Image (cartoon, rainbow, N blue to C red; front, side, top):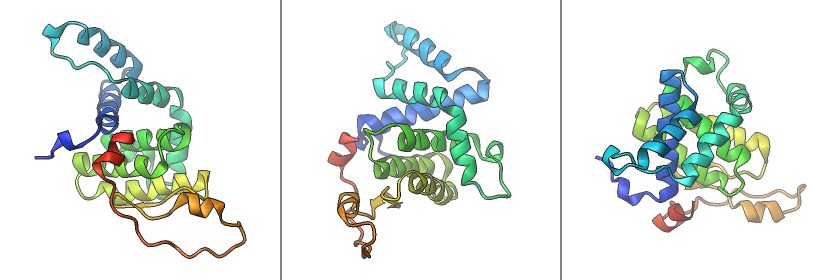
Length: 189
């Protein structure tokens, strides 16, 4: 049984956003409508519906607003034998949340967005989804910025600040893998 208490508020907000996006797609309704519905239900304690975190709301609204851009970015990195609608629905939502954070949320470091997406993929999809979700999100991040940090199994593998300060033409040796993210770093993200 996963230990959900070890995750920070932002990870839980991401996970709830994935849940709401999954439900919206499954029920073929607007995710913002579900968000509004849950907000109303949460006002009455007898409903036993948890309040919606501001970050969950930000993700849902962002994904809904930029859905076409997100899907286009994801489709560019799909294997040519695959189409977005063929991916498992939960993987699609994880990719959409991760892609939205990479492309449109400057407050969240790319490495954190990817690491959290990988953790959710492992939690929801098992062992097959994380490798391709990792490859796709890393490809999206690299297409946006050559300085975007790569993540391997939740470990930051590039020092973005040092690389960004290096002259573009200089040969830069790949740094050694950093330590895994700690709980404190998770809380900040």
